[in-house]
Amino acid sequence: MRKIKTLNNISQKGLCLFGKDYEVSESVENPEAILVRSAQVDTDSFSELLAVARAGAGVNNITIDKASAKGICVFNAPGANANAVAELVMTILGMEVRHVFEATNWVKNLDPNDPALDKTIEKGKKMFSGTELSGKTLGVIGLGKIGVLVSNYARWKNMNVVAYDPYPSAANMHKLSNVVSVVKTIDEVIAKSDFITVHVPFIKGVTENMLNEKNLAAFKGSIIMNFARGGIVNMDTVYKMLDEGRLQSYLTDFADKKSLQNPKIKIFPHLGASTEEAEENCAVMAVEELKDYLEFGVVRNSVNFPPLDSYPHAEVKSRVVVINQDVPNMIAEITKVFGAANINIASFSNKSNGKIGYNLIDVETSVDDSIIDALKKLEKVIRVRVIHF
Ligand SMILES: NC(=O)C1=CN([C@@H]2O[C@H](COP(=O)(O)OP(=O)(O)OC[C@H]3O[C@@H](n4cnc5c(N)ncnc54)[C@H](O)[C@@H]3O)[C@@H](O)[C@H]2O)C=CC1
Ligand SMILES: O=C(O)CCC(=O)C(=O)O
Image (cartoon, rainbow, N blue to C red):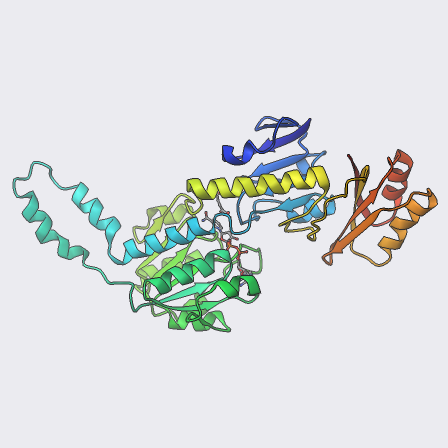
C-alpha cells in the first residue's frame, strides 16, 4: 500500500484517481508522497518521502533545496489554475475602477425604513462614478500562464497592454495576443501603465521587492494588483504612495498585519485559485504526476528534477531509478555496476538539469539488493529505488 499524505483541501476528482493501492489521508504517517496546496512543507520532516506535488503553481511553501539534496522530486501543476486567477484579476480590476466595493457597501448600510430610499440612492450614486477599462493601459509583469491570460482578457476589453518577462517561454508567447506590447524592462511597464498587475513567482532575493520605492517612483497610474505572492511588492512603498495620494488603491490576495487597517488596500483571502474547475484541474494534474512518478519513475512538471517521460516496455521486470548530482561520468559509473553483475540493460534513459541527474534503467530480470547497494555506494549518487513490474 502506498501512503500519500494530503495537506489542505484537495479536490475529490483528483484523489479518487489514486485507486485501491493507495492509502490517502491527512493523518498518514511516514508518507511516500505529499499532496499539498499552500501549507508549508519541510521535506526534511519526512524520512520516507519520495515526492511532493503542489496542486497549484507557486512552490515557495516547499523546501526545494532540501528536497533536491535528499532526492525528493517536487512537482507543480502549471497552468491548471491560471484561468481562475486571470478571471478574478480582471473582475476585481473592473469592480475597482467602478468603485463597486464601496458602492454596494454604502447601499447595504442605508436605512431600510427610509421612505425616500430610492431618492437617497439616486442622489448618492454620484459618489461612486468611476472610469472605464477600455482605452486604459494595463501593465503586466510576468508573462507566464496567468500573465498571458490576463493580457489577452485585457485586450478583449479594449485595453492597451504593456508587458514584461525576463524569461518568456515560446509556448506562452505563442498564446499571447500579438497586439500586446512586450517591453524589455520593468521600468517601461511602470512608466506606461494606468494599472499594474504582477504574475511572477516569489523567489527570495530575486523577485522579492521587485516593485519598490525606486522603480515605482515613475508610476503615474492609480492601481497596483498583486495576486502572485506577498513580498513581491514592497509594502512600505505601497503605504507611502497611498498616504501621499500617488496610488488610489492596492488590490491583493495576500494580507499583512498593517494592510488590514488600510481602507485603500483591498485584501482577498488568497482566493485566486478557488474555483471548482481550478481545484479539480490542479488535483487531477498533481495526482497523475505523483502516480506516474511512484509507479514508473516518470517525471513530468517537476520544479527540481529534469523531465523524463518514458514508460517501460512489456518485457521489463525491474526499473532502477538512480538520482545523482549532475557531475561528469555518472552514466559510466552506473552502467559499470550492471556490467559487473552481468546484467543486460534493456533501456537506459538519462536527463539532467545542471543540479540533478536522473536515470531510469530497465532490465528484463529481477535486480537483487547487491546491485542497489553498489549503486548507493557510488559517490554523488543521492538516491536509488527499484520499481518491480
Ligand atoms: N493567488 C493565487 O491563488 C495564485 C497565485 N499564483 C502565483 O502566481 C505566480 C505565477 O503563476 P503562473 O503564471 O501560473 O506561473 P508561470 O510559471 O507560468 O509564470 C511565471 C512567469 O514569471 C516569470 N518570471 C520568473 N522570474 C521572473 C523575474 N525575476 N521577473 C519577471 N518575471 C519572472 C517566468 O518567466 C514566467 O513566465 C505563481 O508563482 C504563484 O506565486 C498562482 C496561482 C494561484
Ligand atoms: O491552492 C490555492 O488555493 C492557492 C493557489 C496558489 O497560490 C498557487 O497555485 O500558487
